Image (cartoon, rainbow, N blue to C red):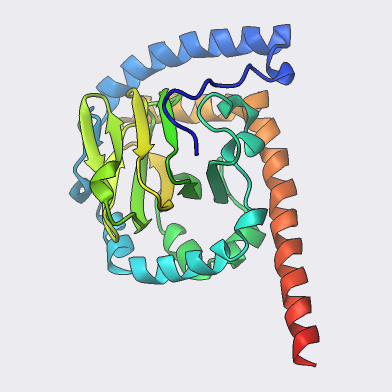
Length: 270
């Protein structure tokens, strides 16, 4: 269990390279300017939490959430093969550690992970209907874990959470976005803007699992164009390239783990 007061680890050596630090610093400056511009270009409110009814394509996730949860439960049978967020993306070393926040990724940077999607075909089919889908994962938060305050990289993207496995004392499992708080509920979708400072607490002895997915913020054409350019440029950075490689590796490892389990079951049935 990791508490609020647990010291965070030092920055990994791979993140201290001079060129990478320079690119990251300049990127942050560009993102701050873009954030202001995109907020003005938005066709939906610029607020920590947004009304889910602004996005009709989310309704089906609440209608069919139990089917998604059932697929998740099958995946969780191989929990040991699911990586921590820090293993996928070393840039997240301050908010995720010791595999306390694990991620089973279905889409990364707008691209489906076919082997992982095959493990959750109903979920993948529903996700394929979302316009301008970016990143999707089952977000698995360990009991007692606290995700410290941080902020997302672009206001051109909004984030949805679908509650799937929620602790019984759900008021003790909550997220703060800006100055607003929200607790998850099974089968409920919430929409948030993660460029606002936000943090998460799971002050229970149960695991919390949600389906987390990002999609493009509705904006006027100038905002959409800027978002497209920024996301395209990001593909050339280590922030994109490193997780992409790691995702492919962990996708193969999970596939191998399930194959071994299936082979063992076949032997037992002989």
